[in-house]
Image 1 (tube, rainbow, N blue to C red):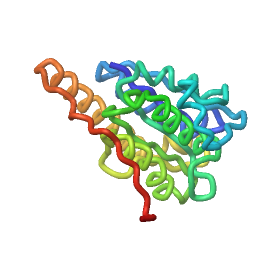
Image 2: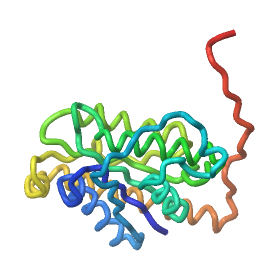
Image 3: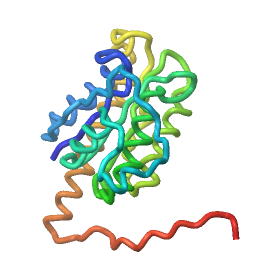
Length: 211
């Protein structure tokens, strides 16, 4: 079993990485393989709704998004981390998430994320954490992904990695999150061994409010 942890910070080994590393360490202790994937600090454009992904089988823009989606196929669970920029996720992380989730769905690869557990980790110096937490969790709610929680909202505080490591409650939240994710993955594995099948999928109907 493997969990893919996504670092949406422009700093490869900053505060968000520090939080994700604590989750990864706990997952490894629970026998779960991990990989921290850095979105990077080169500009990641947002989705332009061209729907070329439905024909190409991937996003029309060749960048980190397509690389991630390929890795996601082999992952059993996900942790998406972002620092707070103006009370929301980073611009790169927002564009990355929009295109990764949309292109995977349009390309008919919904099982890339379908029923795989996911969680959000937020890092901030002071505020904006809950708004960012709500923002990123919406990607999971629309993709039938079980959302894994901890004993508090998954966030750490600090302006530097050393600050984050001193956030005792925040780091404990990361460890609990790791154990909860490991527990859920093991439950899924046990269910498969017992022959429990995934829920039946219905044909999707799209409607709007214009009649």
